[in-house]
Image (tube, rainbow, N blue to C red):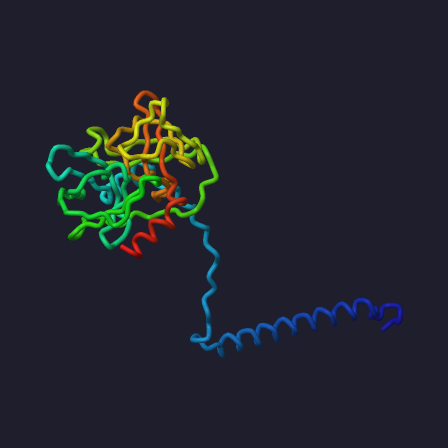
Length: 269
């Protein structure tokens, strides 16, 4: 053969060929190792992988009226009657604890000697005064027997934000009107002098009420006295005490101000 026709081997071509051969061998070896490893995996040692799911949306609180209808089961009628039966007053109250204690206003029971509490199932119980304070216009009654209803939750924190939507509950038997009214809390520390203002309260009440919650909205009646004011979570934040007969204004004792006193009364009751 003529030397001019002999094939030549270039170094670059040889290098590329060797690289291709090595790559094929490496791929085959990797495949073998992977297959062999899979064959030797113990299924009991395999832990499932949980992908994070989409976070659930935060549920919005139920409407105030829905909360109010539920909590009405814990609202009672307070009936106070003089010993000779010549006079009777009706007011509202609410279940405070599991001892049969009911919160109301002192002016609802002032001067009366015979007390009865009627729950939402129309069961009437004899009641006695655990403690009462005319300056605070606050009273705790304790019934004989078992009330239908559960204690209402209480928000002991100081309120800081107005305006706020609230709802008041009452005994319709005491008010002669609706047992639930929607209000707006517009003031947190109002002082309310009674003289010449047209604001109504019961007998033996202070001439000025200090540090009161100021509500505006639906009409509040005399029989609402002692009923609870609920916030947007259905917790008691106040006790209805005063109302204007001609304007959409009413006032409530802040529960945060009197809660320590109420707890002391229960402890010694």
